[in-house]
Image (cartoon, rainbow, N blue to C red):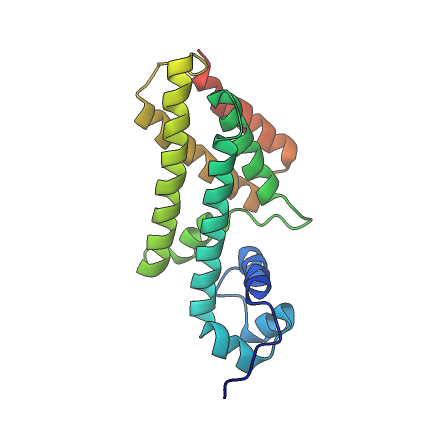
Length: 194
């Protein structure tokens, strides 16, 4: 008979997201995972597999949560430009949510792994495509309603915005503070004004 788990798997996965975002995959030791997650080594491996499997599951969870949050923001505002501004603010808040800037877990992962791990690349690519689709729909909406300039094709502007969001993440990981991020947002979004 299988033993029941005495911990919340989702809660543990959220903790794993936190430590991997701060430290990355390679520098996070199994001992740190056990201590930080508050579960035994056997529970860790029986539930999530090896360290890499836990990392992948954590990255997938973060991707799902982030894509949902951006989509929710996109549908919460009457005008597209306001929604885009709030997506950028959400990104900064998410990257600077505690005393140790963590950046975006997805961007951090692609920077750490490069082309080494096709599974991680696939998750990051899926996330970027989902975020691009959300931003593309907002750009198209904004151009129709007149809150966003027709200076460029919607696809080009969506690609530009995805790139700007990734850049903000890298900047926060490198130490950019909120004031610097707000200046980046202001300058990045200026191109969208009609």
